[in-house]
Image 1: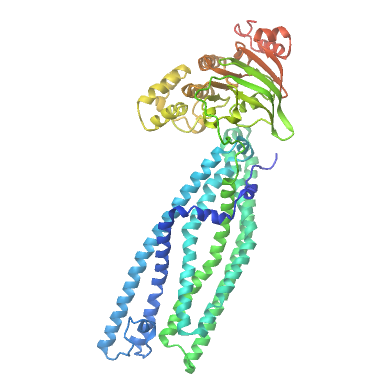
Image 2: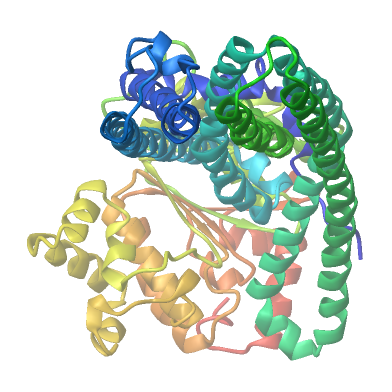
Length: 633
């Protein structure tokens, strides 16, 4: 089997500008709370620098009784004159304790404010980004969904956007921590000893440059990891969705090997990135350790030898308290660089997806019809999914309002592809499709699609109740049903009765409130068909497309669905695709397609009389399934 396809590596080409600037653009609407959060974060970090200064003053002025005034005295917070006597020193200690208590109170309040404001903002940005991305995906054309795996889309909507939220929530605060802590400590250390400050701060630019190189090393690896995760998610989703097929064919070992192969690829790429990351962090720790030893030796030597400008005991202790706080955020720079690269890789996928232009767009001045009668005309239509490989060739077909058109032909003849052009799921390569004389490309897209209902061979039901799935056909009824308004239920029941669905729904355990399961798995194929027909009836469209309604159901269910179909197409323009020709023999006109072209067209009687492909197929089906209703002609 072929390797998994439908990845999202190429979407990076659609990013407009730098992806991380785009991410920050989402924060602009929340700038007041963001500005307060940033201010509170700086206050938190500056308040955290006060206690070591208090400790240094306590050692020099209280414990040792030194005449060194210190930074707090020069700032006017403490008396600059030496104090002597037990009572005076205790008073000075009490003053220092009060300063420390105030610093801790300010730090606690500011920390609460910064974390709450920044984390809440990150959550709001995550919500907005996920909503916008989901909405954009929904508006992309059907060719996008055909060419991309659902697992990859889920990876972007969940994993990538969650990663961006974590980056904003955690790493943004870490950046503030680095700037405030390193800046504040640098000022204090330089004030006390420029020589030792230069030694202590020497690793800062080195770590900054090294982090830049680290980003360039790790970037391609994380891009590859994100693609591997998307492929793994796709494989897992396919296997979980196809559990019945795997069981039926006993392909446990085969699928296990495919999952194991993807898991191993993810494992190998993560290990390679982990090796690089850990080596980088180990080098940073070694560098900061060397500086710590140098400050200890040079500063200690100056104190012992009484060199000019030598530090006091309290200031010497202050240096080491600050060194510990200085290198912790600096070592965190490497981790932040790592997180930044992960977030950038995710942002490229998210904003690359947001930058993708839908293939189907409305004109600048779309045509908004008051009503749609249902007159349809295909004029020399040619269409292909892949360039140069048309699946519909030069098809022309006039369908008057209220007519029922049956489409017959082998699988792959182009029947379904032709009708997807009616709702503009795709656009023609050449020719035109007109509804009420207007090219569908000129319509207001929502107005056009609201008047065209499609009932598929395997209709999609949403996880929810029977009533909700029927109500999906009408926006107002759906809103009322979700809101628990009882008046909407009558319209749902009326649609179910018209679709021959009410009887079996009433027999379900919870009636119309019965949960249908994912994709309607708790219902039979015929029941899902009738729910879909009820949904279409509630929509009350001008045009209906019925695609292979009865190909996979038994004769009794077919009769019920046919009765539903007759009600559905009454007074509407209808297109009925069928393999079972009995479904369309009463159509106003039957169109036979082969290899993307119309080969025959006429009523049932006319086609039988012409002795063409339709007549041959009719007789074949009549022999395979003899039935008075079928063999009547």
